Image (tube, rainbow, N blue to C red):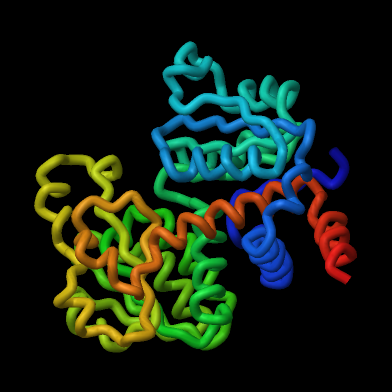
Length: 318
């Protein structure tokens, strides 16, 4: 493919390019039927070396709804990785079968290695505690839809800010927009890495770090909850001590603005009580739906199909 492009980080796209992609995603939300054959005859390979439900199924559904087909594996043990095959060799093989690949891997940088050897576009679907760019695109689209624009709001990020790749990606992505204040809510053991706060300091972006969620609920326009991830801990004792450090419930929601929205990358464990699900400010399941739309738009973008089908759709409405 000419002008081969990959997605390793949300920063791989300019803010203008993201706006165009989000416009496509919003158009898909309005009328998905006109996109039903965009990927006819094309194949997506989902190469998932660690467990996933939402991300893998979201990618597969996105491709199917675009008219394409899906191949792949959901576990490293069911691939040739179990025999010792390298990521570089795997992607060379996959390039012979598929037109685009979504890869999740527990090792940071593995999708980048794949992209360097690939003959097809590669999408980083999560690499260790490093990046999760399509979740970030989902988050950005959700925020834009709920808030009306990307900018001029206060967002609280709560929970595991040390290992949470979704948090790291989102902070980096939002740092390019004006008027955003970050409130970083975590126990000391799970505070955001220094490179994140150093980046915010360098850019002159307002932020503060706190431990108690209750103290800042009233300040927030958006609350991004995260789970404490057992798989990122080196010992069981630390995980058990910290896993229920934050629980968002009705009492805490009563402290928040009526216009605040709660996001969560899912899966949740105990950090959001099920009693919050019925609150009109709970947007995390809506967020999942936006994840499908943005992945459809991303696949189209990387496959060079965006402009033609948007124009075609516009022509049909004139």
